Image (cartoon, rainbow, N blue to C red; front, side):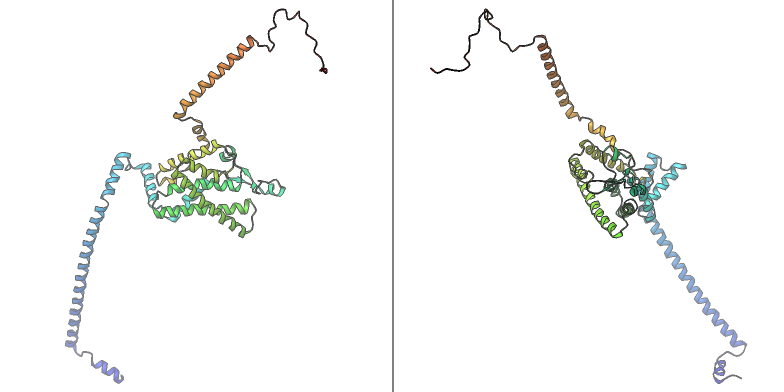
Length: 370
């Protein structure tokens, strides 16, 4: 038995074989029509996708035609298309150059570059020397450590202090930052930010471990002052790079030598010459070489002392004439000395004849009254 609602629903069902076959035929025809419509829609979609793919492929081929031609020219000139180890290395360089703005690549590459910059004037202060009271200080109260025998300490006479290390490191970082400006905007911003982060992280670490500055508030205060100095160094060196060596030397004298009056002018000129040669070397390096080259500072600053001591062609003639004039003066003086030795001159006058037989008159010791 079924309820009245169920009986009414059952009454709607077809009864008999003929009605059932008619219902099946209707359902089959409806499903066939739906399938045909779906198939036609998919065919039209595939046609549209194929046409759009052909259009995009043609556009890409048109856009990359110049790049493809450039690669052919480079392969003809330098053999870029050669396989083997050289070809794999070039592919690696291309992949690095194509992903310069990647944070992971920038972090690893800038960390290696920064270590090369920070080791130039590094120093240490051992806990044993601090406990024994053997740490010396400057007149300004800055602690003096033990240098690593670098050129900046030995040749240029800079003390192994935190200030010297910071300014020498910032000088090297500025050279790298100038080269990074040749990259695209995003890569330049990423790489420079990573370099600055590495520098300030190690600066805070030196304050804590090397100089026993345990107060975080005090470290942050010094780091803020150091950041202001970094901005000033970049501005001063940029100005010197544009205006000339005299302005650049003044910037180095103010920052690195603390505007000391007894600065060695030869050392100052050698540093400026080294900065120019380093910028030229970095400019000749490819973009991918910044991430893979073992060192970015091929030349040494003290090697420029020979360049400083060498006279320019405009002064060689003057120096020759001055040397000849000095030789003439020395020859004249030597001849005069030889003549003086041969015939010495006496201060006594020649006495007349018969003067020796005459007796001198008596001279009164005092005058008498008339």
